[in-house]
Amino acid sequence: MDRENVDTDAIIPKQFLKSIKRTGFGPNLFDEWRYLDVGQPGQDPATRKPNPDFVLNQPRYRGASVLLARQNFGCGSSREHAPWAIEQYGFRALIAPSYADIFFNNCFKNGLLPIVLPEHEVSRLFDEVQAFVGYELTIDLERQVVVKPDGAELSFEVQPFRKFCLLNGYDDIGLTLRHADKIKAYEAERLATKPWLNHRIV
Image 1: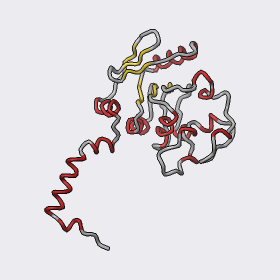
Image 2 (image 1 turned 180 degrees about the horizontal axis):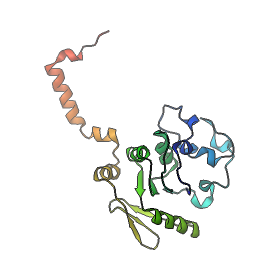
Image 3 (image 1 turned 60 degrees about the horizontal axis):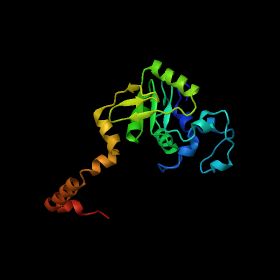
Image 4 (image 1 turned 120 degrees about the horizontal axis):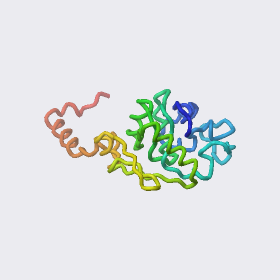
């Protein structure tokens, strides 16, 4: 995604935010850029007119799981639908020099890894991707490195707690459910000592 300041309305346009579900946003990722016609919620993607010039519609990039981007990716409104759409499209990680703060945090909460690399390294990756069809990167979260096809490694930082959650597949709910037994025991003890709390006012 060779553009700076890609905002969340470009990532997932506002007309697709009406759904109360957390699924089904992948087909509308970058909708206004991916298609030549105006998309609406519930529309069958097979009936749309793809933009042949848009990068994700080019055969060489289909099935990609790493999104390479420029600085300030995910700026604009704080919609959580943006990382939902990116993840549901099939991306597992992003690489950019910088991200908008809220978008950056929302990525971790939704199982996406937003990697920050220096701008000159990102620019070099763009050049190499453009030059070599089939160019692949391997991301080793455990070791915190991006491995290039020639074996060269680019290190990145990630907070230990966020790394732990990503490696174990925990979101906020999953983290809470790790203590389900303690929660049940607490609730049982509370009702035993304060039974009136179980009464409902009709």
